[in-house]
Length: 308
Image 1: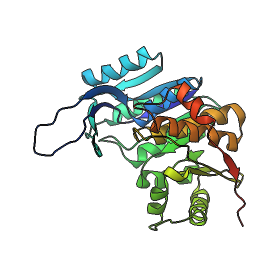
Image 2: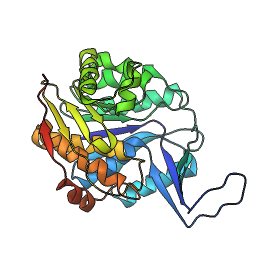
Image 3: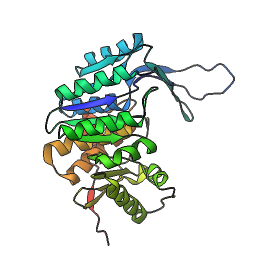
Image 4: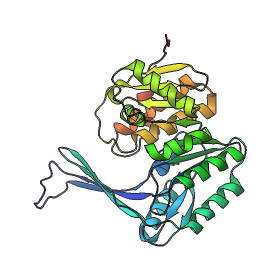
């Protein structure tokens, strides 16, 4: 089973307009309400790729119920902890430029966090995956990420982590199975600007030395690079297509990778599936469908990289 955790989920209100002018009345040509959050996005992809998944995290109020109803409609299992307050609403403006307005979200209590840890402790078993994605909700911090990492280790479960620099650094000593910085985030971790493939490999290795088992680096229009736990390095190309929505592409990439890895234990095949899934979401209005993933999959080429 794959348990995805979204500490601070959201409803994404996606508004489309030809242009947005600040300080004036703007009208949208299309609007959509989407159950959002990195872990939730991942669960949608896992479901599309026929991997059993349960979405977890914290929800509150009528907006939280919307998320549960959306997952029920998609027939995706979930077990959220109810908290006071209302699950946040984020606004995504698709116009001449893409703009996001993210809300802070409700505070998560110590008791609620303990309830989630108890649920995971009672249900996670050997060989499961705990997929923790996103930043801390109000009331939570690095200790809560570390608690999840430690729980995964105690259950012999794979711990997948996608979060910001500070939280990632705290969790690296607990040996996450895979992390997924993009090239800019990788550079920020070491206070450098990465400009070429050799530098990408160099700093990915530093993250591996710090504790990550596998390091997947997304390179935008240049594809992706994987440093596997055995030290093998693979690269993938970027397929051709119109980028319609960058939200969820990274979550999709990581979920695609894990889905294939659980089936094949093959890092190169997993990179191919991950690259296809991430790009498919980028080329879609929402999270990619299975049909779109399979279409893009045929365009992905993965090559081993000789590290001289």
